[in-house]
Length: 289
Image (cartoon, rainbow, N blue to C red; front, side):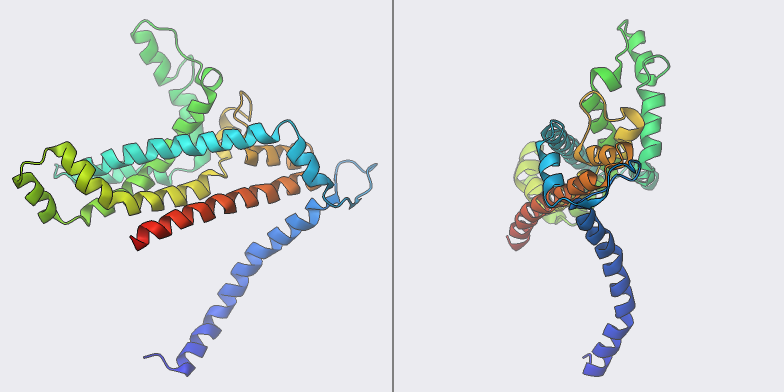
């Protein structure tokens, strides 16, 4: 058992890392809060910086772009979650089956998760979705159809597809781990009792995956709420793809209104925390079940 002296020594050694981490998190948060209550436009020397209270918050939430950006954010998150979970379950089931070169196949499936978002967005934009030389355009012409201009004709679906491709390996890895922890004797017994494959999936495998699915939803949602690089590289926020994160970027860097953008950042933090708390309650219930 750890003594009081050893526990004190452990706290002492962990203190620098904890202090550094808190500073890394708290300093930007405090600065964001500070600027959100001020009028600050660095490129407008004619406008004197000063305290404006909640004026930035009111202006940001009442702007015509706020609610559409929130709606777009939730659509991208929901669409990406649906695709990654459904395909993740199917891929996990497939990778769990014995096959030749199983290790290589698993590495290839997981590989997209290690590609930078900017790089993957460029690959999809120029290699797959380009209406002239893209792979999809050549496939469409091979079947005698007119190529689709993906980023303008189906912009939201295109963003969801790119983001889903990036996060599918993560979901697959978590779900594959959960499937491998399933008791094989239970599946063998159900098979011997004559249960068809679909029944075994819906009554044995899927309930076993419920905890892993909720964890995937929680982690991916937190990260997907801040999707930015894919939109910046592909559509630039046009065609109805401007998310809350991209709106904040436009207010801070393009309009150089640091106060208004900081207020938007606080709204984004509040939205992320509300969703995270809601999902944590669901995860907690599943873990206690």
